[in-house]
Image (tube, rainbow, N blue to C red; front, side, top):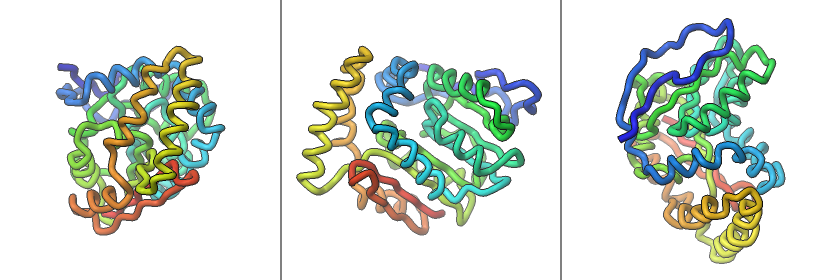
Length: 259
């Protein structure tokens, strides 16, 4: 079984020493999905830009705004991938804040770390990359002022446990913002989304040599929760309020839940 290692990446020069001790924990994630995201890491950002015509950048800014992150906050980006949301959070919380980007893929974290080192903004020194398991977060209770998760909840093997962990590590009255594909209850929207995946997403991914890797999207959305089900899930684990917003013409959705 794979093990997660905190701080597997070297911090940038003049960066403070990590705030966590080295720990190893079993990663009980689906091995196939972990391997998939590791394989697509080198082309992940380019494909996102091409497939969404750059719109994913707008959706991610919306997700960060909905998180309520503020100057000086201690925030967490789950399933951080190559770091898009973590960089946006870093700008929100500033040099006096702290951002933890957590992912189960070393390859994705390596890309994120490389991007961090190539950027000149001083606030980006406040980001720390952690390899870990969303279902078993290595943080104490009520630790974070805000949490974001972009295109990650759909890929965990236990939605309920993931939400429980987010609730546990979030401070009272703080918010979690979860961006993902929207599982529409409208027949036309669902059919259009499937057509887009089959005829656009997979076709474009094939040009990068990753057609098989992107075919999983359709089944992962089919196995995901609708907006109403996500709202009920959040309330069921203890969140005081939850609201799901359809964005991107209904192709995407963002759950905002307040502890």
